[in-house]
Length: 144
Image (cartoon, rainbow, N blue to C red; front, side, top):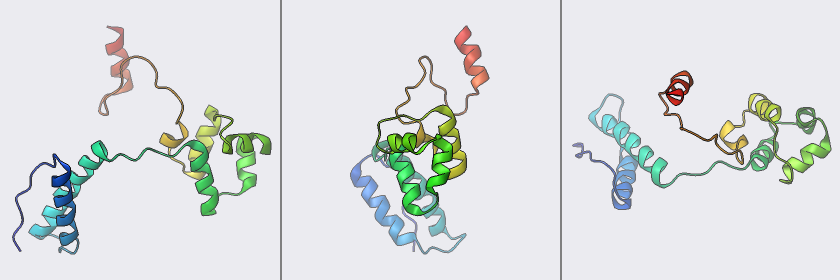
């Protein structure tokens, strides 16, 4: 089978065509031209989805409840993180936000992504960092 001409995904029509092509190429052999096409299409689709079909992270309470439902955490562990069952209950009901230490512990002990735990915290004012930019360089640029 010949590989198709790869092109940027700029519309829903392009996106649907790429997804259909990926479905046809899922069993391509490693090292084959079809596998190379599959790899490139996957990257293009992922990029398009990140820009147009982004799924927002769950709220902190929902992320914690999900870990409980998975059976990955006991209530005693959560009480030790929050200090009391009343605080835990308030967080799960959305009546209380997480503190910095709770965020760190929930992330390190339960593996909850920081993106979910930081929901509700506003971004600091000023310049946003680019992914390849170091915090030190950003600080130096801000001082100028």
